[in-house]
Image (cartoon, rainbow, N blue to C red; front, side, top):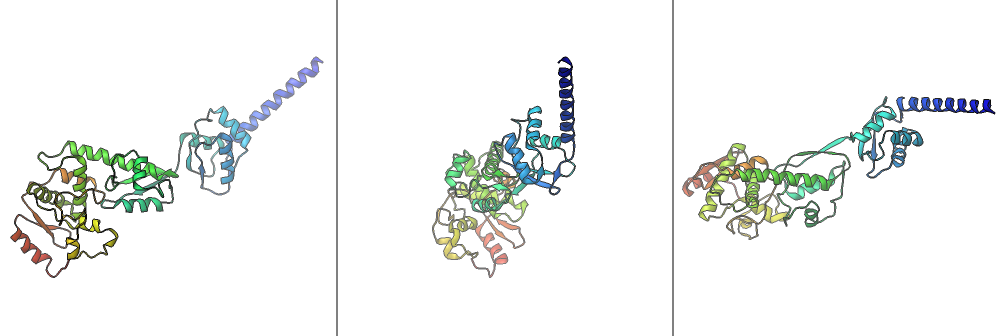
Length: 333
């Protein structure tokens, strides 16, 4: 009886050693992949078992029971991170689990361009193949609520930049990042602003920065264009800037701004209404924000485009008319 028990114990030890050796060999051996590199996705909230299933479905040959055991032994049950991943031939189960617990996801990016409208931003978000489109179909008001923005209009609230994100991230998260970035940038510029500016709040400065962004053809002209609008606001003159009129026309604008458009009143027509328009008209970049809050020391009240991206600035209407005759002769609005 004692001999039989010893034999059973010995057999059990042999089996345990064999199983341990087999387990070690499995976790240390290269995984079989249907192709290399292989992209796969892990859904949010996945358990070890469901991750094993998703890996098999993606084309990674693993034994779910052994993978679950490896995860438990590695205390990885609560550390798995959702997202999109890439694995290459030669990777082991141990490598794979480490990748999933680190959250070593593949990255994508999306650029928002200076001067874009919020509609253009949303179109780009909706078309991006690597985003989860949670914002699609939401109204602007609901979207602002989702990102925690107190403003009532979305235009101009997002900082134009290139944003990197893990694939399958929510488009709402990307927008929230762009919103927070604009808030930080605007607050910093507002804090260091020049004295005596005619803006009562950072939001008014943001409105003006969007106009400066749309009016600028050459970077060096931004502070001078900002100065022109500051001088006009101080004197109570209408801003008379074409980009606001175009924005107010919306879908009615066909690419040709006509004289009748300048007299057709909208909340954004700065020919028929004095002061700032009610909201920004585009995404201002950092250079436009800075120029708006640090205008050039100039008494200019007028400017006209030369046609090469630069502008001519004038202090008097007569000088401005001369510049218009020289650079805009024969052109119609």
